[in-house]
Amino acid sequence: MPKNFVEELRWRGMLQDIMPGTEELLEKEMVTGYVGFDPTADSLHVGSMIPILLLMHLQRAGHRPIALVGGATGMVGDPSGKSDERNLLDEETLSKNVAGVRAQLERFLDFDCGDNSAVMTNNYDWMKDFSFIEFIRDVGKHLTVNYMAAKDSVKKRIETGISFTEFSYQLLQGNDFLHLYNEMGCKLQMGGSDQWGNITTGTELIRRKTGGEGFAFTCPLMTKADGGKFGKTESGTIWLDPKRTSPFEFYQFWFNASDSDAGKYIRTFTFLDKDTIENLEAEHAEAPHLRVLQKRLAAEITKMVHSEEALDSALRTTEILFNKKSTIDDLKKLTHQEILDGFAGVPQAKITKAEIEAGLGIIDALSAKTGFLSSNGEARREIKGNAISVNKAKVKEDYIITSEDLINDSIVLLGKGKKNNYILIVE
Image (cartoon, rainbow, N blue to C red; front, side, top):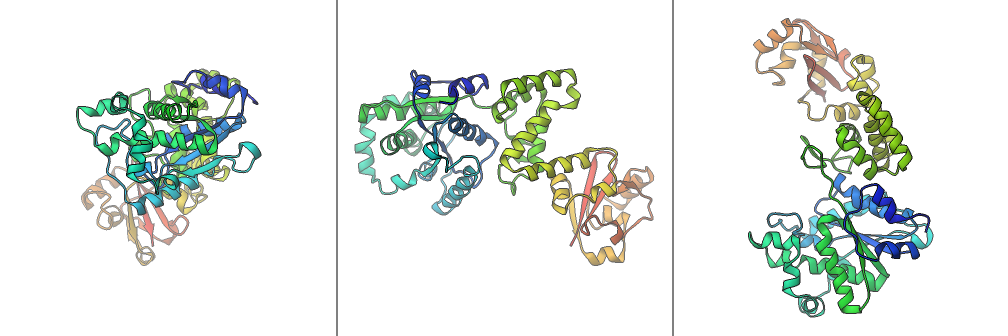
């Protein structure tokens, strides 16, 4: 094999539990390994990048990756890491989610590179015609309730209550591994550390039903140094779909990583080699305020998930919006969407082209028409305090907004002080 796959993950901090013999297997032959993706939404999120990267590392090391989308298991719900029962999805929603997840996974793996070409599969394909009687006879009888109840994912829920539906989830996932082992010669399953119980159920089924041997390892769940939940911001989940999370917001998520998290993130979420990362860390330590580590991290993963063009757009938007010296002319270099992305979460109001052409007084623009400020009185006080700007230029109480103030013929940027911005969108 081109390199030691397990050792690569180990120095990156991407290895937690590993079954005996797994590393030796990966060194002596080309191995088919898989990761399952739960289609609870029509897009994956940044937490999904870890299993995606496991598959990418696997393929880069000369092995064959299988990305399994859980069209069947998604109907049941995995109890791992959950404190209560999950709402079940209807088939139409699930089908839409599966299609969205499949399309995203196809961007990260090579499906046409010879013997180790990636494979995409959906467990609904082999579960849809499996009757309940067949399942409990052919799968259920091989594992005791005691064995299943001892799994951490189940044990933690026994006291508060767990349905038979979620209790049986590990049988479904175990059967996936068995099916892939029999049909595609898949010997390895990978996943997050919370999946260890489900994964080892699969290796046990393989042993009991075929006398063969399955292998497995898990990756630590990503955490933040401050105890906050990874992949969440004030605006919500960071998605891989640019329609849900713009490339600019995506870039900013990584750029804003703390110094204590950035070193861990750049090892996990990029393919930069050890020497490059350690050199970046040394450079960062000399001048932390330059955020060298965060800039490289954000650039690498934004390019990987979106594109070089999306990264260029995110960098351009970042430079203009956060540079204190930028002017209205700089803002005009951004597209309509780049401005909206850059000011996501900023209060916005829509006005008509006719209102702008007739001239819109600054007092009305701040209060009566938009509600940005609570009253005309507040608007006047802020203007008298020299706190109000239009497109970054301070204005007086008699200022009239006209078509000449439009950025890209569609947007006016209002400001109050240094931190409060408002967007007028002209339709």
